[in-house]
Amino acid sequence: MDTPAAVRARGISKSFGEVIALDEIDLDIAQGQIHGVAGPNGAGKTTLLGLFLGLAVADEGRLEILGSPVGRTLDAPGGVAGFVDGPGLYPSLTARKNLAALAALRGGDTHTADLDDALAQVGLTDVADDRVRGFSLGMRQRLGLAAALLTKPRLLVLDEPANGLDPSGKKHVHGVLTRLAAEGATVVLSSHRMDDLEALCSEVTIIATGRVVFTGPLGKLSSEHQELDYRLVTSDREAARKLATETPGIRLGDESGKDSGVLVVRTLVPALDELVVRLVRDGVAIRELAPVVSPLEAAFLALTETEAEPESGARQQESAR
Ligand SMILES: Nc1ncnc2c1ncn2[C@@H]1O[C@H](COP(=O)(O)OP(=O)(O)O)[C@@H](O)[C@H]1O
Ligand SMILES: [Mg+2]
Image 1 (spheres, rainbow, N blue to C red):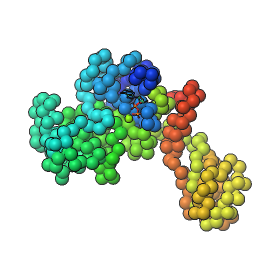
Image 2: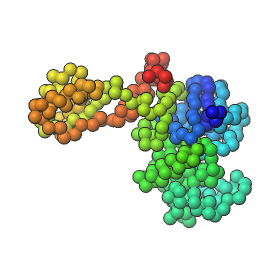
Image 3: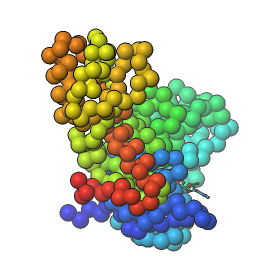
Image 4: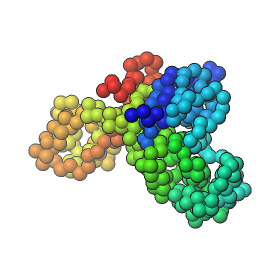
């Protein structure tokens, strides 16, 4: 097996004046993966993805894209497409003419059928001859994706592609990315929300203040050994509340939903199981029971919030589990 990694980063650092945007990033992304880069605003996601696209160079460290070392000069590595901070488009041209113009800039032949196919893949066929000036953010993102598709990329890099997408746009984008990965291309996309990435990515890297706090398969991130807040709606809130306080390992959470009959309990899964058994035994019906935020979102928040304290031990690699 000597397929090179799509991305191999070792000790990548990048500063803007006093601000350390990336702080010794190590990262491996295998080919054919949809890899998510998650992190709060300002974590360094756009800076990192910009390095993959050759829009900036790192101050320190080694970066290999599709098996080739990235040099010290600004240049898009071969086989890579995508954009950060929204795609560059010509507002006065139509969607189709934008694609034709971008293709012409790259040189080489692009056939009308390819343009039509790219527009169809991102769901913009109906507005192909409308000027981009009137496009929403989501439509621009999809047109940028169509432009990237025309280059038949082996590595597609998208910064916050979910921003501004309506459910239909999201469906198209998910379809395109899933197809690309199935054909062996690699997709790296960022988001400040874990739930955006959950549906698409097999692996994620979480960065906080320029450092990797987790990298690995999604499954390793959510764990039964993690306390979560659960929303509990029963037929008898007061009885449920009393049972919750009596059950070892259960703490009552935010009580602001008192009037709506909702109880929030913070607990691990085994204690929650015990509470459910007790509720049923006492004839209290359970109408709703679900985590307030998904286990993955909770893990994301825990990892990115504790990282604010330097060297707090929150750094976590896949192997730590
Ligand atoms: N061109 C720049 N000049 C100065 N500071 C920058 C520049 N780009 C990014 N930064 C800073 O680097 C940090 C990381 O930014 P960024 O990569 O945009 O984060 P994210 O995309 O995760 O929100 C932030 O503190 C940001 O203010
Ligand atoms: Mg960003």
